[in-house]
Length: 325
Image 1: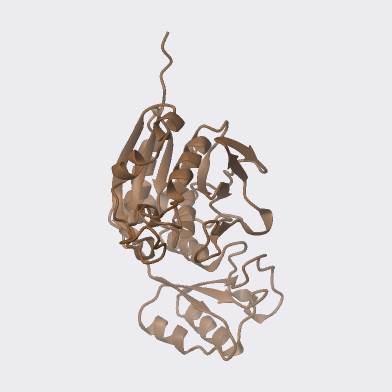
Image 2: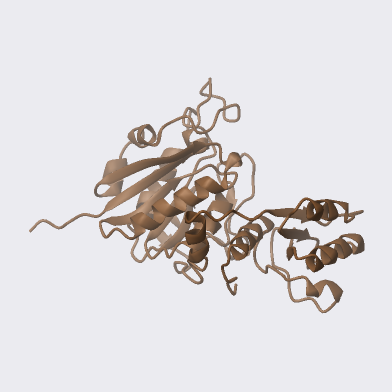
């Protein structure tokens, strides 16, 4: 009796992994998003064997991820949702640029009930590099797709497997550009096998599915901006954003959520005017703890870096209930 083999679907969005440079030795002067996903896959030796079955592909977008847009997020999430509902699909792999990968990962984690693996992979070297890292990252993503119990939105890069909540780009050039901070990665891919250090994530996955449904029905994305606390900060930028119709503000505060008094006053005015405000820290490690003093009235986004706190606030303003992190 022949055993039915499930397929892996690769969704291409562009990025450095699909980039081209004029010279093979140029690792920074390339143009991202130039190689079609089918050509990218065809250029990886051993990929068909690593997939262990049918390998489908779709070109959802073809962009440099610094130019990521809400429309691409919505389309990507919708395609992921449809493939996750398909019993013939084992996993979804997404080729993505590194610049906004952590934001896309958290967005997909928030809107998808990913009981199968959704694997974002990437590259720090273009496809034309002397030693491109994209092919190995794709092979590693296939290994994670077949790992027992694999589930949730994950990032596979430079031999490491990261969860969507913790992952962050921490270096602008080196191949191993991502970190999961204090907790470390979920595990590693070693010669086609996954070695786990932690269990697969699932807590609070899909908490904002309703927001995705609203977007699919034509709801407008809210406007949420990020401001930062620093020496000599003032409230002028916040006041200007409020006048310009901003609906949400995320604050990259100093230390344990501390704010310059002028910025704090402006944020309180904004909140009183109906703008949703969330406070997190600009520190790369740790999280903001509960604050006993005055600006504790400004809600916190504990455990989320500012760009992910912004994603969560976007989804909250679309009607989702904020998760307990």
